Amino acid sequence: MDPQHSAQDVVRCDVCDTPVPPLHCDFCQTNLCKACVGNHMLDLSKKHQVVPFQDRGPTPNYPICTKHSPKQCELHCEQCDIPVCVHCVSSESHKYHKLVDIYTNYEKKREDLRKDLQELIKSLSPKYQEIANQITVQKADLSKNSEKMTTAIDKHGEVWHREIDTIIQKLKSDLDEMDSKHLAVLNKQQYKITHTISEITQSIADLKKLLDSNDVSLVSAYKSRIAEFRKLPPQLTVSPQNFTPQKINPEQLYQQFGSLSAFSITTEEHGYTVETSEVGSSPLKPLLDEPRIISTIQTQYGGYSSHLTSVTCHSDDEIWVCSYNSKMMHLYNLQGELMKSVQTNSGNDPLDIAVTRSGDLVYTDYDDRTVNIVKNTQIQTVIRLQGWRPFNGSFKPRGITTDSQGRILTIDCDTMNNNHRIHILDQDGQFLRYIDKCHLQYPWGLCVDTRDNLFVAEWDTAQDEALSLSQRQYN
Image 1 (cartoon, helix red, strand yellow):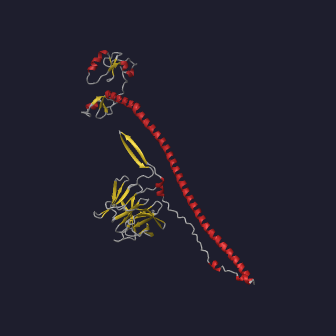
Image 2: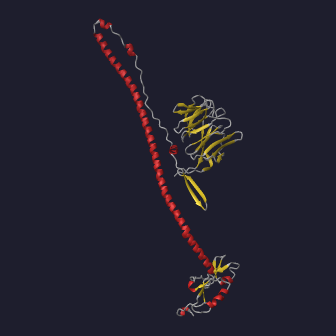
Image 3: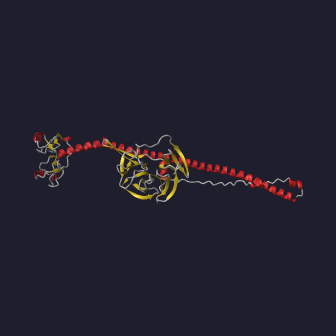
């Protein structure tokens, strides 16, 4: 009976047309009466699942074959993962492929969907929500910590301001005290001179009276004070006080003020942990692939009797140099101009030199066993070693310094093995690389300025080589 040209009929058995069949095969989507169910189950070419008609599953919408329309696809090719019809199979397009009943594949997929749905609802969605909640908490903690750090920085800044105010007040107080002492000396001298002037004025008046007098006894009794008045008082010259401000080094102030700890993120994934860190206020700068010479300074040292042995940065624009075969230490600018020369206090040759944070030159006197500091033009001995020398034959580094990243730089100048290198290590002593392609000749002393420019003193050439160590990024 054609359903399109007749009234709706009752449900019938799809095999014998018996009305109101009590059974249904879900896999075959076939309505069955009791008489036909046996033969249907004997068809072993398909899988069967016979259930009561009222418990049947929904009628699946079988796909139409894309190659043989309007034929419905009743099979599924597992290798190609596509539905196929009987014509596809007969055309050998899927020869040797594993074909399964499409409804069986459909049920399997539905089971997979149910499992995925359960996992999403019961496991994955709660976990993602938990991670999202943790991020919200971490963002709040980050904001609180940032406020806390800002407060700490502000408080530390207030301490610095108070210290600076104290220093300023102390200098002003010292100035007032020195002015008071100078004024006391000047006032005392002024009083004496004023008193003497008064006596001289009185003597002038007395002498005029005596000259106008005819009294022989008074004139005869006169005692001259000219010899006393001829002894003029010493002339006092009070030199005005001078204030010599130290050059402010922003990089040193930044490092001395404090630093932020390393920025760190820990990622946990599939049972292992990946941690990344970065210095929050000062990220590591990559080393140049090829260090290059950016400046050469010709010093007054040279030759066999006066080797250039030590160099230290006075500022980003000036360097101190010395030789332990010369008692003179010289200050040069980066243009090679001699700015200042200082002789050691003992007349001995300095072994090494350095500069304090306040910009004062410090040198070691090996023979005198002293450490000395040069303040303006005055030399003070700050340490005197008794009965021993700080170096011995078993320790032979030529020079050592650090850069702004805490990396350690040390010279390897072994004349026996013809080594003329600078080794670079990280702050934990792990080797990073060495510099040996800048034609260094007997490097001896070295230092680094605040821009990470490395200055190397060469033994034989008496030159300072300025090498650019790392790349800087400017915003």
